Length: 338
Image 1 (cartoon, rainbow, N blue to C red):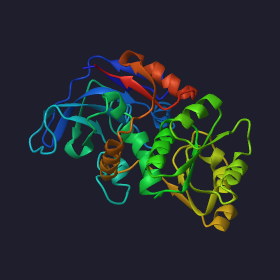
Image 2: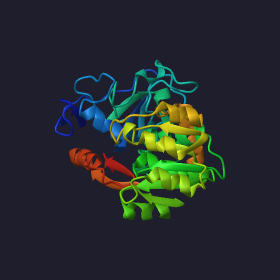
Image 3: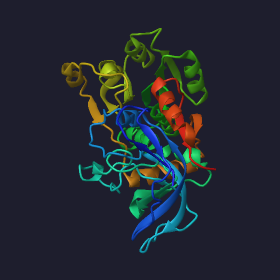
């Protein structure tokens, strides 16, 4: 079968297409999936460049996110049948309950082979049914970006109607967080470097728009927009480079869901956190139980993931480069087959 492998951790240059990789077969308790589509996350750039903190194997098949159809089931499998539409779970072992090092030890496209292949075999508890109305391309955006946003806004953030959420940028996590926050009845403030992207976010339901290039002290604008109170939740994808401003943006007793590191390193004054009694909550994707809850909400609202651009399987390297450029709006998808 055809599968991409990371032969060297040198970015997209280390991504090699292997046309002779053996096709996997489902063993006891496993399902074999024909992959139709995959999607990229910033985390995949870290893996490809050797900056991901977890140790990765040589010739790793990358990408945590993919969706397809079950083409074979092993003995003992009860949850799936041939023809089912499924996605892999980011963590191959975190079914539910509190997170632990044991549960996060097996992450697709990081510590174990991922989804950028024609076929994959996963344990029965490492796959999940996807909403029938979604295309494979749309379903492929759910396992990491979708679930991370759901965890940040609903599971950990516990946002309620009438509360206010601050989002940074218009990548996959931020736009999913926008959609989930609006499902909860929240007021959404979003900051971006592009007026064109802000206009598109407004069409998705964003209420308050801030261009952080023309308004570099954007945290002051956030406080102003909330009549001096601050937001209830910040979905923080920038990391150290934006965290100080996010802390200044949150209300007393509010939450900052820390997800990404796209803005690079920075320094944080802890006295600000203390004075606000703010909660800094690290978000590391989520469990299969959370994934199931998210899918119910997605299906109930007929929510459609935002796909910025789709590449063919042969264009996987170009997809990595486009993700790295930061010019995308929403998710970048690689279509593996029709």
